[in-house]
Structures are given as C-alpha cells and as structure tokens.
Image (cartoon, rainbow, N blue to C red; front, side, top):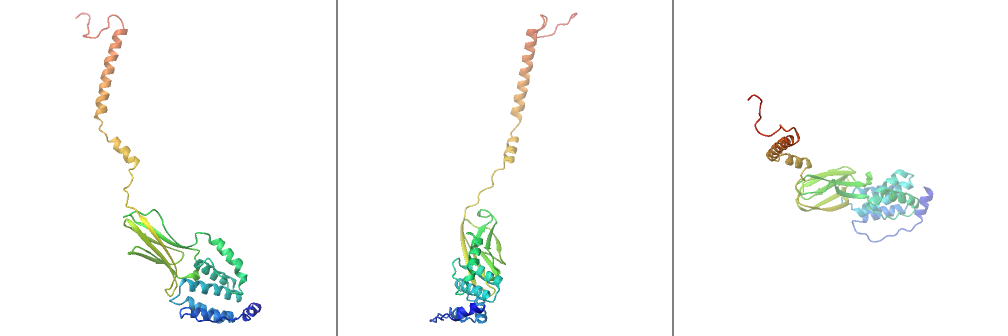
Length: 262
C-alpha cells in the first residue's frame, strides 16, 4: 500500500469546471488522486447512494471503488466492484495505479460471454389472448449493482423482484408489445435499462388432434357396410349351391327335393 499511495501522491491533480451533477464524482476523484483513499471511498459510496445516480456515474464510481479496495488489500471487494462496472459498461478504463486489476478485468469479460447483461425474453412464442410469461434476467448479477429488477409490459403489467430474474404473466393483444426492464438501487435510482418489443400475432385455433380425426371416422354410419356385407353373403350362398350342383352325382339338382315313397 505505501508504494501504491506514493505513486498516486506524486500525480498532478487536474482541476476544471464541473457541472453540479458531476461535482460529487469530481471531488471523490481528487481525493483518490491525493491518496486519501478513506475519504474517496466514502465519497464514491455516497455517489452510489444518490437518488440521481445514472449509468455513467455508477460505472465511474464502481471502477474507482475497485481500485480503492485493491489499495486496502481487499481483493474480493475489488472484484465485486469490477463486475458491477463491467455490467454497466464493457469498456472501462482502470484508474491510475490499479493496473494490477487488468487480468481480473480480462477474466470477468471472458466469463460474461456475449449474452450477458439485462435481457428480456418470452418463455414461449406470444399469441394474442393467451397468457404468456415474459422474463427479465440479469447475467451476471453482482449484488453491488443494485437492489431490484422491475419489468413492465404494456401499460397494465408490472413486476419487481430481487436479482437475478423477474417473471411476468401477460395476456397480450395483437400487435406490438413493449417490455422494459430496469435495475434500480436501494434509493430508487435507475442504473441500467433494457427494452424489447414483441410482435404479437393473432391467436391461432388449436390444431385438430389425430385421435379426434380417428373418432370422427369411427362415427361414420355403419348401414352401408351392413347392407353391403349381407348382399355379399347372399351372393356367396348362391354361388356355393351352384358349384355343388355342377360337381356332385347325377341326382343332385337345384329345386324341390324328391323323396322316395312320396
């Protein structure tokens, strides 16, 4: 820590006019560059607790707090702040004197992958008039980033919950369905927002079940088959008798039977 502090203490402090909104961060930066790490940590924590905090300010505060925690020898805390900063912005510049964190940044970015961040998706394809579930998920979900996820779809559906995921049941109408997800801090400041518009088609009737088609076929009238079958049986009897008369003895014939003695 003494070497780290000495390097920062010898750096010139750049002062320039700041907007009132940025002044708290500028003051915390000056404290950091003067190696007053305890004061800088308190100032950056106050920035994160502000109700007017936005995404840029949050990313700035987290990257400085990562360097400050490193200066105090608190590696897990430094990593936690880096994760929060990288969810807010994939491209962050480490503060001067925090070059030791560069391998950690590379490792976190590799683990995050291309689908990280705040994403909105539906569990199944949406159809008008049918209840469906829409999910907002934060990946990764560093606890230092915020307190809650709020998901809104249309004008009537809202759900809030803790990290990493919030699900909402909607029954959409045909047309576009706009869903918005927000990460808010404990003070209510929005630090991350995501939006998605679903194109909802009209509802399609349920498909005819194959078993139902077989049942319909089985309900066809049976009388044609009964009549037809009876006719075939009668024809078969006549043919059998005709065959018998042509292939037996000379006394065999078709007609009235003749009995001796009568």
